[in-house]
Structures are given as C-alpha cells and as structure tokens.
Length: 447
Image (cartoon, rainbow, N blue to C red):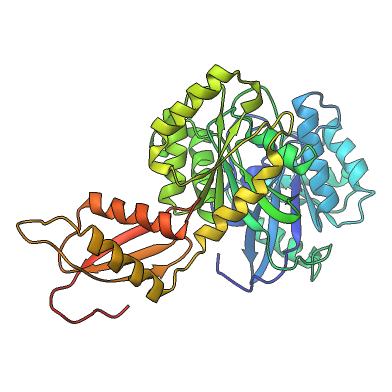
C-alpha cells in the first residue's frame, strides 16, 4: 500500500455476516496481507476492527466485524451489537455468505435488516473456488439484495471484480464531518485479563469492546475515538500479550504482531497492571516493547481501590524494585470498574506526550552539560579521561541526544547523563536516548 494524501477521514466499508463465513479472510484478501486474525474456529473476530486499504489509487477503510447473529445471547449478543454498529456507520456494506451452505435463517434475517439500509449493500457469495460452484452463488439472489458476487476469499478468485464494485459504490467523501487535525494515538496494552477492555468501555462510556470473563477475549486491536479531559484521543485496545511473538502460535501469533504494530503506530502507550497481582514477566515484556519502540509511557495500576493498606505498601515496593528502569514513566492509580482515578488519565497522557516532543535549545543544553562535566567528569578509560566537547539534541518523539567526545563513555556515565538531563529538563513519561560519537582533535563538531 502506498502513502497518499492523508487529509481527512476515509470512506468506510463494513464487512459483515454470520460467524465463520470467511469475513476475515476476505478482509486479508482486500488488504493484500494477513492483517485480520484467521483461524478455522467460529467467532475468532469478536470486535470491529478497522484497516486502511488501497485499490486502483483509491484509499478507504475496511472494518472487519464479529459474526452477526440476531438470536445470539451473552457474548454472542455483544458481538452482534458491534457488527450492527459497523453497519450504521459504514458507507458501503459487504454481506458475506458461505455459498457452499446457502442462505441460512441468520443470513435471511440479516438481509431483512439490510434491505432497509440507506447504504449500498453488496452480497459476496464466498467459497466459490471454480466455475462449478457458481450455481451456488446464483441461489443467493433469494436474499433480495441484488446480484451476488462470486468470490473465493481464500484463493482470490473474483476479488478484483468485487473491489471494483466497492469503489463504484463508495461516496466521494465519507459520511460525517471531517475531523480537525487528528486525535493523539494511544495504545492500550498489557497482559491478558488486567482490565484493558473494561477501561476502554469506562472511557468511552459505552460498550465499545467486547468484555468477557475469559482471558484473551480481545484478539485484534480496536480503535475508539474517546473524549477525555476535554480532548479527543484515539485509543486502540489490543490483545493481551502472553508470550514472546517468536514462541506464540496461531491466533496468538498474529494478535501479538498486531499489538506490536499498535505500539509502533501510537504516540503514547498506557500499560495496564493489575494491582491485586504481582508484577510479572509478561508485564515487564510489554513495558520493554513500549520502551524499545521509543513511545511515551503511562503506567496505569488497575483495581487499586480493591486493596488494603498492606497490599498498597507491598505494591509500592514491587514498583520501586521491578520497574526501577522506568522510574521516569508517568503513573496513575485507577479503577476501571468504578471509574475512580480514570479522569486523571488525560493529564498524564498530555504530560507524557509533551515530554516526548520536548526539544532543549542547543545553547542551554551545552551550558548545562559543561557545568555538569566540570563537577563530575567522565571516568578515565585506559589511563586517559575522555572529554565531552559538544552535545546536540538530534531528534524528538522520543528525545535523542548525541554526545561528541574524545573517547568512549562508559554505560554508567551515560546513565548518569540521562538522570541529570531528566532532573534539569523533565522528560517525565518518555524514554530518552543518548548516543556517543568519538571525535579526535580540537575542532568542534558541527551539530
């Protein structure tokens, strides 16, 4: 997919249908890559998930949805509501039907609702792998939604013709008013069952993510535009990370890849920890992902209000010991269930992003470092003490500093410089990077 003009929102194509008819496979075919979770188990996609697609020079958003079942109860009913929401907000609706099964009662019920839709509806007869199967597709005229389009999402047969139809049906501009600017992007991450979806629903003040008592209900990132602290934010609720991507398999492998991609696409990550559980290896791994991606970091400790004073004190000791390497991270104690402390999250996000985007004036930076080096010079190495000649801030988002020195600076001294830069200039909530370039001679390097 090529980068094209990014101004304004894109028209939306919602892919809907009952469970296990191949919606996610079709979405992957449209995107030309494996983005949506696909597994031979009904109900793998449980939320509505949006991806950006490109066909014949036209960009649009494809929304994958959970299986649509008007008779569903419990978790199934939640999935249905997500699919129905996608239908209400889409510019074009693609109804996927399994041509090898034919129109089921659920398909007919969906078609009855869709016939009342103001948006164009395209019926996809999926799993038409050869000419002999096309007769099955013709039977889907009975849905009353026009000519069924025979497609094999798995093998790609007919997908180009389908995309041409989609482009013909798309409006020039999406429904709704274009947003001014773009909301700041927040990745909501953490290991399974710490309350990420519950927090997202609390923030959104609606059932935006499917919440179930089974750990790992969310398998795809889910975008939500949320107003918090008088400002709009784009939150992405992601799958809980259980193990390393290299050792995960199946659905978990692809969910882990997309969680990693969500962190990369975000500006700030909220890592959710469970106050009633010890800080685990999985928690540490999630935090490492955020730091290595160079994103601003807010640590939100969930279920804080359920603890007694002894556990509060114990948790503080755990944080001090186990999260010492990210003492700079912004931290807020919350309760997703009751809403306590959630309102403070906006201030922490704003402060972390401000630090992430901070640039220190070169003159001020060098004046401070010169004074610092006079008071605490770098230790000698090989009988010769290196001299710091010049410091420049090379980048922001996150802040990156380059130290020009006559010799190698030990890791301990680089950590000392980082600590002192934080004390002087802040940088709460953002990682900072300090690299050293060794330059011999008397000439001052150019910044």
